[in-house]
Length: 227
Ligand SMILES: Nc1ncnc2c1ncn2[C@@H]1O[C@H](COP(=O)(O)OP(=O)(O)OP(=O)(O)O)[C@@H](O)[C@H]1O
Ligand SMILES: [Mg+2]
Image (tube, protein in one colour):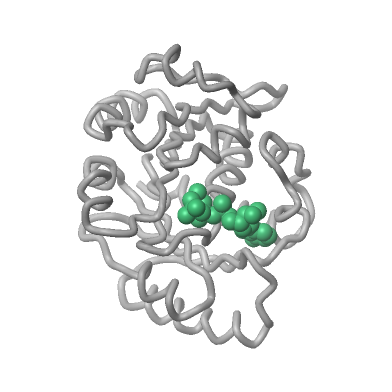
């Protein structure tokens, strides 16, 4: 299963955060690969720490690195910066999809049509799209698209502490979109422990208790169920 994490043209909705959390939780039940295709390499930093720049040259594009940890069956295809050739990455994605139960692709926000063109090979290669949107009109407008032939899951994520009534209002908007296009959605609450994290520390979170963890577990179930 290949899942692309998408937020349309709006950045900062929590794509990288959710992609990394999903990969960590999923890796305890299924072999998981996180492909860091974002511009700034956030997922690579969260999972491998502040890896010095030579890794961009040393790792051939077809290689993946294992993330250390006793119970983690988690690998990362490291970030190659904004010049990554997504046609090349897409070829590898096809190969990796045979080797891993879940392949998650973390994209940057696609702020213009050039960016969409650049990442199109990865969009086409994916079976499912995880749309990450914030509960505000601009984010929703840029993110709530249908993708013909793809399974859609929507994460209504709160990277900031939004008022409960606002989240409830936008949950209804997302629910109605999902009903129309036959998609599922999960509301991911603001989690202060997440916002305090820095590179390499997202995996020290104990994914066993909070509402945030429950939302991530629900998303993992939905994505692993997608066929
Ligand atoms: N549910 C959450 N609770 C608390 N903080 C969150 C949550 N989701 C995201 N954040 C915080 O919001 C900020 C933006 O998140 P993130 O970098 O994952 O967004 P992004 O969509 O990947 O951004 P970009 O478009 O730049 O790639 C980060 O500081 C992150 O810690
Ligand atoms: Mg990101």
